[in-house]
Image (cartoon, one colour):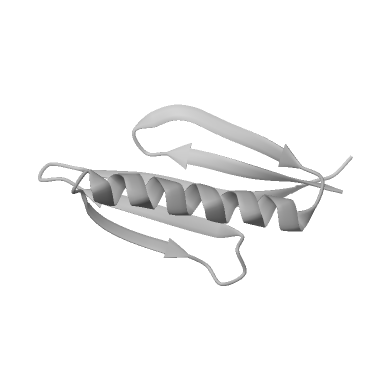
Length: 81
């Protein structure tokens, strides 16, 4: 079985998928991507809420603006077939 790290954005219709051979590779990529995105958002001075679930399979970053929120979700999916 392979694993995919999926990125979804509330502000863009694009869905980005990265495929990995192992769960550990996928979890490491998700964690590193989450930390990098969160660092960039905080450096930009955005009002930000974030969560990385303990199992490493889901992360969410919400940036608050006066008239809207931008949400970035990162999740792992199993690939069968």
